[in-house]
Image: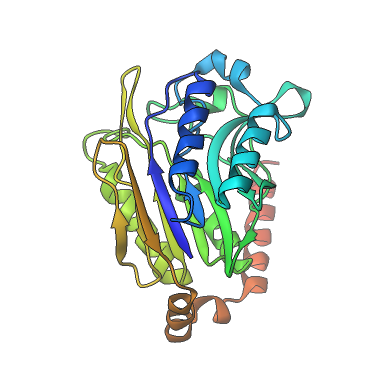
Length: 283
């Protein structure tokens, strides 16, 4: 399966401009890729604060239908980030998978980033579920930025036989201080998941600057051996295309059968014991 990663610089709050860029990429890549992946909040931009409510759209919105139409015309499946309008006037930091010309899966960010320079928890409600979907032979899961740093979520995806883990990111270099390299950290965690779970890991970051936040890009695809297959440059918009092969997933999982030997009942028992203990401690 051929995949393309689009490292973009969305204009904050300008859905029309960002949508047109996404649609143009799909048209330009017709016949060159099966799946096109954009970063977190690629439809809206990041630092919008109260304006987030104004740019929120539903899965059946005109914008979503427009993307579905072009996806159908180009025969390209597409993953992108957007602000989702939910029930009860709640909004979510979400990712959409457009497959076969229709909305197939919506994944909501479970842990909105609320530390360091990030304030997502002030605005976004939390997702409740890690979902998977099938794209050709790959069982695919989407995690959004900070969710990747919660290993339990990747583990849940792995228990659902995830073989393609897609991480949509808005990551600045130095967002957590000078002693923490975001670029190195992302590559390390991506390689860890790839090797431990025997899956492809796709990290799609954005570039550009919003307010005082500078996003560095360096999007990449990591194979199940932990090797970087292709990557985008730092700080510049770019598109990279590569082919991923399910035979590599099979090869790694036969050599290192982590999930075959994983005892989910043991994990559940321990977590239940820990939860009960913490509940008792608060009495």
